[in-house]
Length: 486
Image (cartoon, rainbow, N blue to C red; front, top):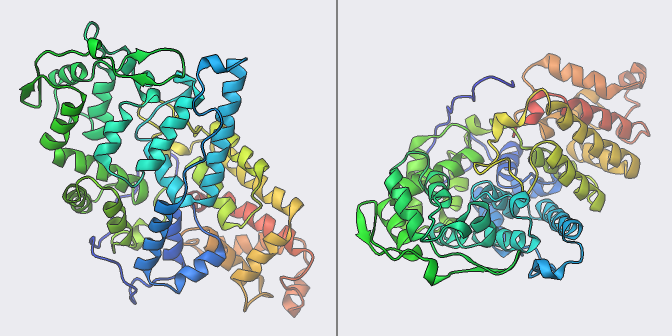
């Protein structure tokens, strides 16, 4: 599981809207697939309601909710510069932790919006530990939330001017006397075109010159402005177009001359993150066309993708490894577990321990994701996070464990095999592959309750032993390789 190549993409289906049918019914598995990919899962009650609705309407509701969900509220320190601090090191760290904690809370409440925001955080990467200013982190994050389903061209245009990016990729050092190519290179390689896709080193050099002048740096954590005297006004040739290009003209040329390359690269990244680690070229080509014909608006692309028959193909279900944050958030949300400040703090801290610290991706290319999330060092940590949530709920509100089991097995509350299968199938995409695996899970669930109580039908989900039984079964499930998948 840890070293094998990614599974081939065997999904069929087109971008035509998915409709409920005998071969691919709109059932709990497909509802959960949608909520797990466009978010971090949903509680059992939400899933039950969605099963009764039209699939396209459920997607529209999810995206409409994303668009209407508020961004994180502005903190009191959003405009602070270094001069506003008495102890910059300690106070700025505390402020970032506070804001990051609020973001975790938003992920638990508005999963779809924050899942897409986190995707863009891993695309337009900046690292707090390289620029240190909470006010810049706030401005950067607000930009991610504002444009998560907005206009991609405007997204790129605004991102290059935000202080976190200007400092992280050395744009603030890029002036006509000493051009710095760092941001220009990543603008092409990571943010718009992809590696070695339609640009040359000379294009990078010329683009860096066009980007000069964003050097208006007064003090740490203050806004960074354009300084005309430091901008290179000489002639530049970018993608074969020659002129006295500046910041605006560069973006015009980029999105005009390389529209196909940009749209296919971006839609490919969206596909890999939300659908399958191996691209389906025809699907990406169709999404790219949608992005271009809608003048770079992302919302139509997301609606088309998540409504498509291709997205709901069984062959893309359960094919991705959950990120550390995805694993924890999904566990809490689908288990209908306790949500409080302690839980949010734990998710934030454990994310860092498992190599997914928000505001600090590992490098400019971001977290590789998928199979890179799991190795011999991280797998035990992933198990421990599940243990923490299960034990916290067992100790603090054991009725939650019982309620979930009862809701999943209303007609079979005294059959341990059926109860076990219902819980397993709810938590594991596609369920388990062999009768022996279900039998082993059932043995765990039966725990220390004597067999004669099961044989006689006396045992049921109202017994006082049930919280412990459900907790032990969940712990067992969390150790299964299949549980790591989404």
